[in-house]
Image 1 (cartoon, helix red, strand yellow):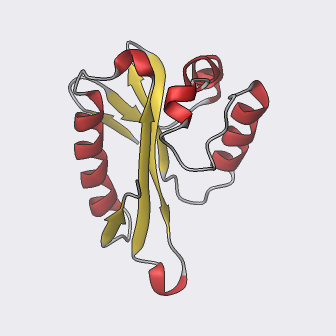
Image 2 (cartoon, one colour):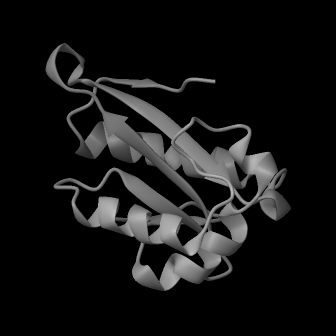
Length: 128
């Protein structure tokens, strides 16, 4: 997947993103606004586990947010199962130096459009 969002690109993660991912994700201010599944401190081992999880997905539902040719955030969804199969939990994060620039607004807009047009999802939920 590759979405040109104006101020950023939303695209598939790749192993070349590991260094940038560890550098920008290891931030307490990011971690404290996310669910328990996002680790802090964020280590090389966490990045390896993340890429392993991604490689085992049959349908990609998590993507990198790129600014200036570097992965500086993530966005995606977890699709429910059973009676919740048409519902997905939506989430995102962005490296602190990029906050307040409209990057996440653009990424969320275009990614939600992509999800509804390409995945079998009728509802997105974003828990605070």
